[in-house]
Amino acid sequence: MQWLFPATLLVLMPKCPMCVAAYVALFTGVGISVSTARWIRIAMLAFCLTSLAFLAVRYLHIFLRSTNVHRTRHAR
Image (tube, rainbow, N blue to C red):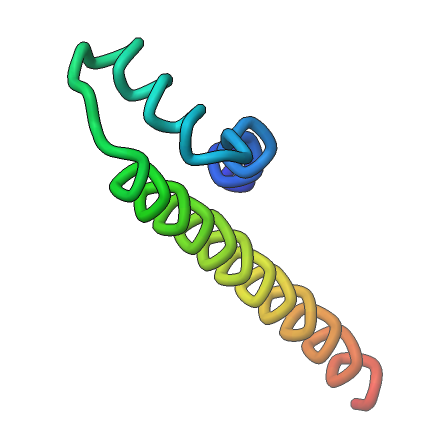
């Protein structure tokens, strides 16, 4: 469930700055410049990728820890 928000945002993120500016204007009523929309798009992309990387590392850490505990129990 934790993967849902960043993955969905990454998939649904507009690919061009003009679309970001249009979505911001549509949902908030505030107009922004294309250069501002470009930076918002880059920030959203960085946020999504960082969140997914963090979740992947956390999942891998939990997985490796559980397999390591399993091995030490059989070693006795």
